[in-house]
Image 1 (cartoon, helix red, strand yellow):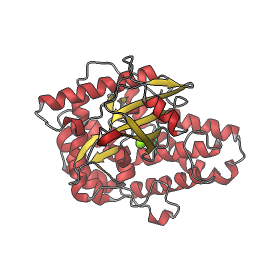
Image 2 (cartoon, protein in one colour):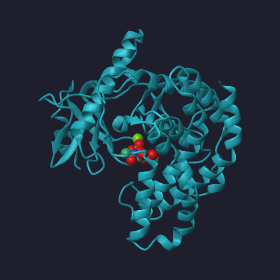
Image 3 (tube, protein in one colour):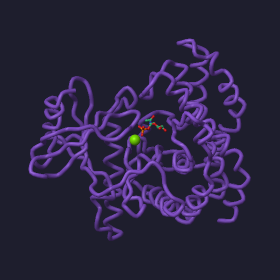
Image 4 (cartoon, protein in one colour):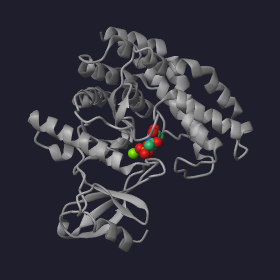
Length: 361
Ligand code: GN1
Ligand code: MG
């Protein structure tokens, strides 16, 4: 896309100042993000192309997001928080009052840029406690949102559905990659029943759904310089789900000693020094609304998310890389193996996690 085109898209939005330059920002695997600089050091914005192959209903998507951010902003104000602009995303309407614009059939939106923030690829044991308690508070803040939120991606964290997608990929073997990864498919199948426990408990009426963020990897969180969470970004997947999503997906990235796509899997381990303070902080602030069954299954959640991500990356590899943005041909396979290694390491710490959780009650 040319600067001219990008600037003309920006021109549809009610921003302050004159947009001068648009440059790439961030490293999301789904949407494409840019920073918008305005003249004379005016306000900075974030322009984002929304991938409508994956988020097919932009009206529902932006309706959810505006409801969530308005609700959080009101809560922060009621709590006397003063730097609200840095604590919650704020989307900018278009000149005709919508929250996205369409350009050549593609969907675009703009939000305010959050100043003085730090993005991290990991957290320290010291900041993990604070992050855990912030997530508990995030879920608590959304517990009484009056709007009923849509599922922006149907069955997004439904483990049974993700396994079904893997099985369909395996059956089709569209690009002939199955033989190479059959061993990993077998490893995943061996755990399939156990990993679908959440859906079973839900059907039995024992496990509730609550509003969750559903993509709490460390990249989707902005921190201040002290390691406090300023704000959770990437709100496209905020929807009703099991609390396991936010707890487990955060640990999937934060408690990994390696990168999500680490090629040398000996570098990938599940880090209990992050798990402990994170779980402690989370339980402390979420105890008031979590049920005993939810708390008891937090170690399960720490395994579920590396498992689910292995299933998703592997299905995409078998399908010929149709979903996640890749940087090289084997990328999804490398990601799958790294996530599987993380799963194995989390499994090895399961008893230790359970003991620790039991002590928090
Ligand atoms: C995607 O958009 P991004 O990169 O923050 C994905 C998540 C995965 C994550 C893996 C809509 O998130 O579910 O966990 O990649 N988002 C969607 O890094 O599929
Ligand atoms: Mg992201």
